[in-house]
Structures are given as C-alpha cells and as structure tokens.
Image 1 (cartoon, rainbow, N blue to C red):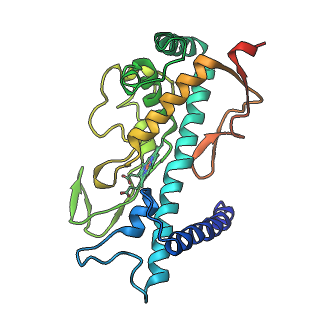
Image 2 (cartoon, rainbow, N blue to C red; image 1 turned 60 degrees about the vertical axis):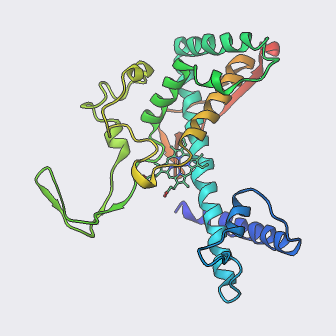
Image 3 (cartoon, rainbow, N blue to C red; image 1 turned 90 degrees about the vertical axis):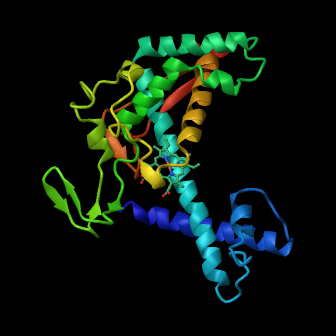
Length: 265
Ligand code: HEM
C-alpha cells in the first residue's frame, strides 16, 4: 500500500500547517501567500473561512486540506516530469547536444550567464520546449482522471448514463499510434505540428484542468537552461522500466552524478 507513508507525512504536514495558522492568528499576520488568501477569504456575507467559531476546526482542516492538495499536485508531479526529461536527454546524446546548443546561445547572449535569463528568452526555447512536450506525452505523469456524466451521453454507439463515473486514460490516448506515430519513440520533432484536438492532455482538460501547467513547464525550462549550460551529468546504474509512487519515475529513480562544467573530468 503506497498510502501508509503518505498518511504519516500528511499528519505531520497537518501539524505544521496548524502551527503556522495558529501563529498567524495570534500575531494577526496577514501574508499574501496562498495560506494568507485562504485565511482572509471573505464570502458574500463578509465572513472569513476561519471566523466561524463553531466550525473553526473544520474550516482550518479544510484550509490545510487545500494547501496539502496543492503541495501534492505541484511537487511530485513536477519532480517526476523533470526526472523523465533528464533521462530522455541523457539517453539521446545527439538531442542533448542540440538542446545544449540552443541554451548556450541564450547563455552567451546573457554575457556568459552574468545577466539573468528573461521571460522573453524562455519563450524562444523552441527545441527545449518540444522536448518538454514530448516528455509529458511519453511519461504521462497523471495517467488518468475522473469525471461524472452530468447528463446521458452517447459515445460511439455506447450510452454513458447520467451519474456514471468516467475515467479518461490520458496515457492510452498519448500512446495511441492513431494519434502519435511510433508512440514509444521519444521524438520531440512530432510537436513541430500541433497534435489533433483532445489527443494531448498532460494537464487534463476543461474546468478542472491543471492550473500549474505553465508554471511546471517554466520551471523545467529554467532548470534545463542552468543544468546544460553549467553542469554535466551521468546516470549511474539506470534500470529500464517504470515505478509508480504514485507518479511514474524511472525504475529505482534516476541516480545520477553532477559536475560543474569547470570541474568536468
Ligand atoms: C508536470 C507537472 C504537472 C502535471 C503533469 C500536472 C497534471 C495535472 C492533471 C492531469 C490534473 C487533473 C486535471 C483534470 O482532472 O482534468 C491536475 C490538476 C491540478 N493540478 Fe497539476 N500538474 C502538474 C503540476 C502542477 C503544479 C506545479 C501545480 C500548482 C502550482 C498544480 C496544481 C494542480 C491543481 C490545484 C489541480 C486541481 C485542479 C482542479 O481540480 O480544479 N499542478 N494537474
């Protein structure tokens, strides 16, 4: 059961958050972060989520729940995504060289990294961006989601009655050769052409699509920029296969050694 260590960690996170909430309330601290927004949220009657004395614990639990939900949604997904990108680049030295060349040109135009990487530059990382999209397709970090049919739906001759749960399998869609030729090959060039609508949904779709979509890709672009311009890395003892915990990562993780460019052997 992969849930038990998570339950323990969750309890600990709940405690940490309760302490932070208590401290902020005692000191009347108004922070502008997510917790601050939830603590100071006012409904249409002007009441905050945590003002209601009777339901105080419930609302605090709900606030903690939301924070932990976002930590969970944001942290391990992005870590898993970046791990796969490093593996795919490591496994394809030619592609890695091409990505390095793209990033080196930006690095040089920033006076050898002395000036900061800009937002505009992150918008021009064409090849690196395609590597990210292909990584998201191949790894399909979130393999599926749940929805409920709110009305009777007829789909390809089948009736999905109102109230039935539906489970779209992103991984299967992303690995379907009808939509992506040779789907098990890592080939960023396939994204030179936009995929057909609703065939590429690494961040889901509709009202509950991932709000962290752009943030996760931006983090990966920034990390790759610094990594390939300043470091070299070598995977040690890589094994083929996928391990779920619950998000997919390469079997046994991706043990790797990193060197700063100046001290490369
Ligand atoms: C590579 C990284 C990420 C992947 C692959 C990913 C993927 C997804 C997917 C597939 C969903 C479900 C959408 C649906 O059911 O249709 C989702 C939901 C969500 N994600 Fe992400 N996500 C990533 C990073 C992030 C980050 C960085 C954040 C926050 C900073 C975040 C916050 C959320 C939240 C709050 C939801 C729930 C949205 C809702 O139910 O309305 N995710 N994500």
